[in-house]
Image (cartoon, rainbow, N blue to C red; front, top):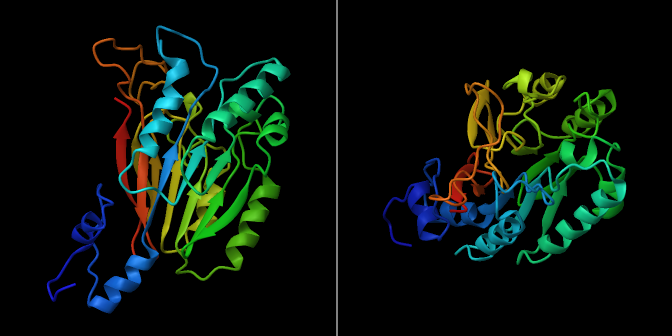
Amino acid sequence: MDGQHYDRRDFLRLAGLGGLVFASGLAGCAGRQAAAQQDFTFVQLSDVHWGYANPKVNPEANATLPRAIAAVNALGQPPDFVVFTGDLTQTTDDPKVRRDRLKSFREHAAALKVKQVYFFAGEHDASLDRGDAYLEVIGGSLNYTFDHKGVHFIVLDNTSDPAPILGDRQLAWLKADLDRLPRDQPIVVLTHRPLFALYPQWDWATRDGGAAIELLMPFRNVTVFYGHIHHENHQATGHIQHHAAMAVMFPLAPVGAPQKTQVPWDPAHPYKGLGFRTVSTSTAAPPATREIPLA
């Protein structure tokens, strides 16, 4: 690199990451190179609702997930990993159908051309059986952690208990995980429902989510990514930023609408309101989001 100054926006654009970024100066070539080694992107896909069937809302329901996967595979800069933030399938009272939908979803997700895919359950996947079918088919755990290039990721389960709550046991698990981390540790929290009370009357909240936020407050760099509300939303609790994602299957009316409802399909604008996001982040700066419409 030459001796010119590049801000973070220029640096990421030159690296091919693009998108909306938060600027932070990187002084000196050595500093820029060190930060570049830790820069990475991941993709958030949410609310796939595989098995959904309402042609008035999405007449192309069987094509929407494959379309999203193809769009991710076509990204100019491949993400380090993909995370599905819940509601992988549409709810059903039939345990066999629930398992069949989860298996079919998993087969489609296998087409993603990335090294790692992370899953966790939404209420459509887990609330009727406390996650039994999900764990049987998808495997793993309902809540877990992982680390990637210096960033600590925490997956919280606020859907398998229909209350909906995190519960004392999970909060104790979260506290134990956080207690071992330094206060400057960058943290990304992944969950399905919002942790804060976005709109409780529409089930857009977690009853004890405030307890989780309180545990996270001492950490200086925390960002939460969630789904459930089926449209983009950005809000803060103190210094903690919360980002809701668009859905893959159908959009929902936003807060302020007369009622909670699925937005009808617009034949003139197919896939309107549907999409996914890429997230660019590092140990040196907060995550920056880029929304990618399926249209």
